[in-house]
Length: 305
Image 1: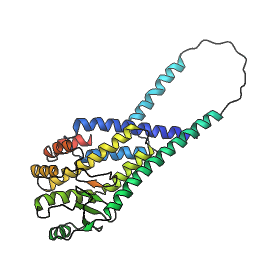
Image 2: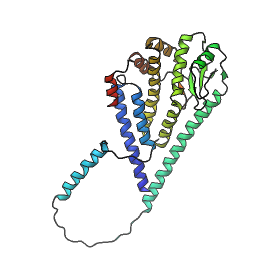
Image 3: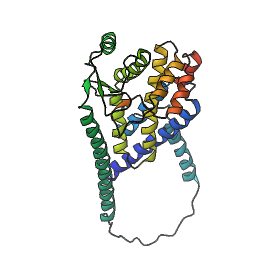
Image 4: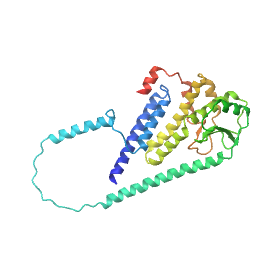
């Protein structure tokens, strides 16, 4: 009905405003606050886009606007209006068919868009998953030692395949770190960075985060700002992992950046539910890595604000 349509459009509008604000903030302070800041902000935008209700708050900007609007309308209502002569009242039947038809047409177009987007992402994932199923387990001493040193409640496996050209991670309940078949297992210095990066993705359930982003894109496929969020949030997942790896290794920024540059090959095809150590906004990632600093009180306060 019209009420549900207006509620959905309002939800989409609020989400679009949030995405625009986050995008501007990201451009201004990307390398001045911890990268997790933007993951929190994108999560808030996702909640606004996917949850069909909101909780009112006195601190909300929308609440402030709502307080100002009635004040103006009351002033207008208080102004005297000249009396108008009475006119004959003509009762005309209301025609509701076009409105209902318009709502129905919009619903059909919206649902068709959701179906097309969902089908596209599903086909991409199934195609990649079938390719990944042909991978083989890694039988190497370093891989076994690394897995023993990184315990996880879920069963984590390291596999390799000739279908990928850069490392990636897929799966939620049984995550897999997929390495290229051409991986040099004797280069333990680079391997520790690469595997740690993928391990952070697994620890944070980034596959579920990407699934939420895909859901938002499918539901709000008509909004270009939601597609902007999908691209930028995916980048911020990688940037946050980079920042975590650099801090875990005591600030080995230059070595980590060189390893990242050597992994610049682009994977063939789309991998919507996978997290990869790939050429995703490479210049932005290298710049962010080299500017990674310890979290200070100032940066923490700025992130909180």
